[in-house]
Length: 256
Image (cartoon, rainbow, N blue to C red; front, top):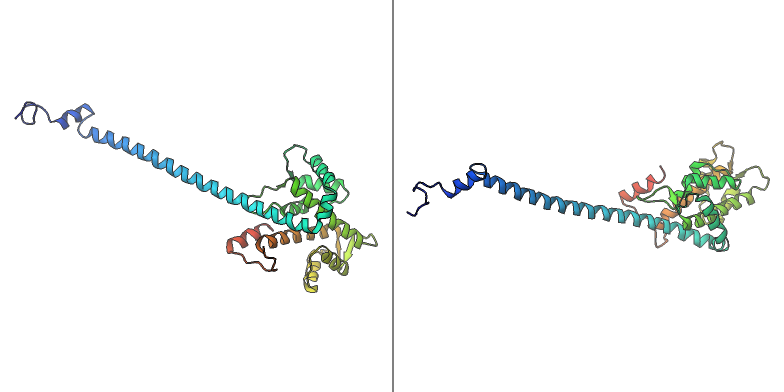
């Protein structure tokens, strides 16, 4: 045997390395720890990247949903009130800038309610929130609208306001069922008499056969929201929509 070979008075190589690295098995433990750390870091990085990609994808889908709903609302309002929007564009944009006091490019329901009040048509914060929901739908909603949405919303609100004033000939601040039916039809909400009566009963809080201006605007916000949802899920304009369970839940949540 050669000097240094086991059995010739020299310790085995494994023993030498083991004792030099903290005792028998030290090298295995060190290598295991190093490999485990490297693998853990690699796996953690990969998982982190995957989760990040998934989150980015989800956020992108949310933003896409929001954009789609906003576009659907803007589309039907422009089709119905495009002439008013074009004629009053500069004036409406100036109004938006005056409301956007912090220069964020967005206005909240509080700011919209203040706008209504300043124009002499008090509606309250709850109705203002419903009008904003016409554009601010889907998973990415933030309770605010930008200038483009405001221009469209202003056209819709102005049309409702003028229609109510034209029908309220005695200036009582309320309209009856026959007047309501005419307004709905002229604003593009062609419902059968039973549906119109159901709306009347739902928003005639005092049960006197009359709807006040505030309740009428509340109804207008709800109907506008319904039309937006219909536009989004009925691209062929068949008058029917098909929803998955998740889509149905998302739609209902917008009314909560």
